[in-house]
Length: 252
Image 1: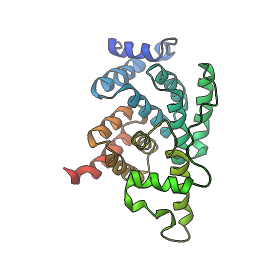
Image 2: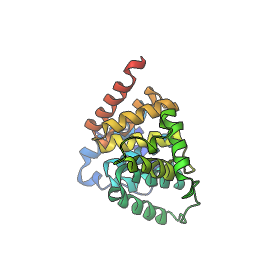
Image 3: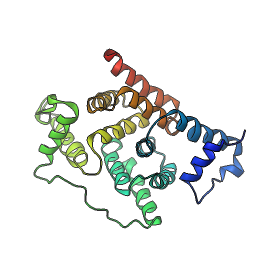
């Protein structure tokens, strides 16, 4: 079975200056994988290039695929994804996978940027200060999840209120308020982080609701889950689809 013409053309656009060694060592595997990921999936999942690569990049971080990430962020820039967008995805991942797993991705990003002559640091995208990060973070939570988030940072059990405060200040105040990516895009990216790492179904359902509220509808989320399947595998992609179904079934 040979690689299809569409898979070969897409691969050439992503990686014009390199050819995988798998063609010599594992030709049967790479032909099947390329035909699936770069023909079947691309032909079936109708997404613009930017959204497609944002989803792939975020899913690779969530699943821990740093070697593939290196290649795909270089490819993403050839399809129009900006260095600033890649940085924002990497930064936001820290809130969802922790610095322990995000650390190699931050370094990989910098290494690829150096290889491509991208000067760092990039222009600042920060919009909050130490004084207003909680206020701005809470406002972001309200705009994303709804009015029920007002006062959430100070609500509930006093023994755990600091976590809710950190969610407002750090997760939303430090990351979501940054420039470059809007809330709608950031919620799609969060969907990918959570779907890819698995074991986060309650949070995934919560963020599916946020995606829907912002206009990333059921059809779109199914496209995203379908697009990232080659990078995260069937079990986690099917879990994501089940969460979409559980969240949207009452709407139909």
